[in-house]
Amino acid sequence: MAQNSIKSWKMYNKSLEYLASGSSTGSKRPSFENIEPGLIVKGKGCKVWDVDGNQYIDYRSGIGPVSLGYANSCVDNAISKQLKDGIVFGHPHPLEGEVAKILTENIPSAEKVRFLKTGGEAVAACIKISRAATGRNKIIQCGYNGWLNTLSTGGFMPIGIANTQPLKGVPVQTASLHSYSPWGDIAPWEKAFETFGKDIAAVVIASNYSEMEKGKKFLPALRKLTKKYGILMVMDEIVTGFRLAIGGAHQYFGFIPDLAVFGKGMANGMPITAFLGRKDLMDMAREVSVSSTFGGETLSLAAVKATIKFYKKNRVIDHLWEVGTLFQEGVNRLFKKYGISAELQGFPVCPVFSFEDNDVRADFFKNCYANGVSLYNVPYVTYAHKKKDIEETLKRIEKILQALAGRKF
Image 1: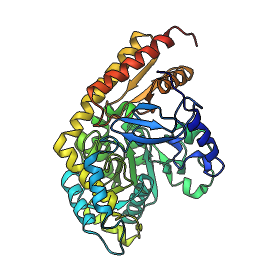
Image 2 (image 1 turned 90 degrees about the horizontal axis):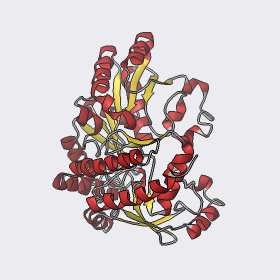
Image 3 (image 1 turned 135 degrees about the vertical axis):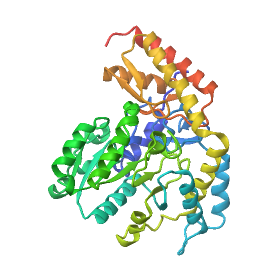
Image 4 (image 1 turned 180 degrees about the vertical axis):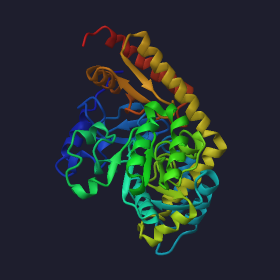
């Protein structure tokens, strides 16, 4: 089954002459030349194809947004139907209000909703509203909030960002208003609040996928602490929304933040985010001038409406947990069987690969690509992944680990 992606890489390398950094999304840049697919041209269900015609069982899922599987007919039909009537207008389209209502009915914290296009700008909108509402300036972040993490030091940054100069271009005055506190341990937060709580406008929390279980105690405790100091709590549910539960971590762990942002999974790959929460705070979006020409773009809104309908009808969340568990337990069983010092950690709907040795990690990923399995550090299962797809994936991974187990690093 060994395959390569030579033509794909030739085209990719040519694009570097015109496309800065090789991709507009840092996490999508390929690393393993002629092995990993340089360019993907098609997706269907849980499979993708590269320029060379190689087929992969895919767990990158668009880096998270594809939650139902590629080319889901229910979502695609809704998009096609709306396309005939127009994409964007100079006045609101009925879908904007309809989809906002659907979100308020399905997400616990959503009293009112606004739409944007990316997670970073949705988080930025919540930060601006929080500062306006509280009259305070400091923001404490936790976890990955997109490239906004580059506003301060100490916070989580993916390898692709950490290996750059993330603070370059950030004025010292701006960086001084952003700081980081860790996931899962309430003590540092208590200390930070005691020290300068009167200056903190909001905390922005993205869950730690590898230690997600800590959210059960940590998140409600932090919610209680923020209320004590009059600090707003913003939940970044970009990944956890429509995975842990439709309403993300705050629905799963049972508490209500002041504001929350959603994106990946909400429209099965169409570009849209929602920031939502308390009515009084959301009504401030106009007052503080949070606005975007494409916020009410109709194709994405039609996709959200169809996606949520599909979720409700087909028990998608339950399915993600079921097939995710099969995948995670299967991979961990094989790692243990072949003596590989690695583990797939966290909840099965968004687990994280952890390797003791980076060389072993690289060889594992390379061989997976070469054998038709496309992985990401967070392997995202979709509704399109069925038991047979997981079993086939595990069969290929076992052959790879058999070979790796006999090698010395």
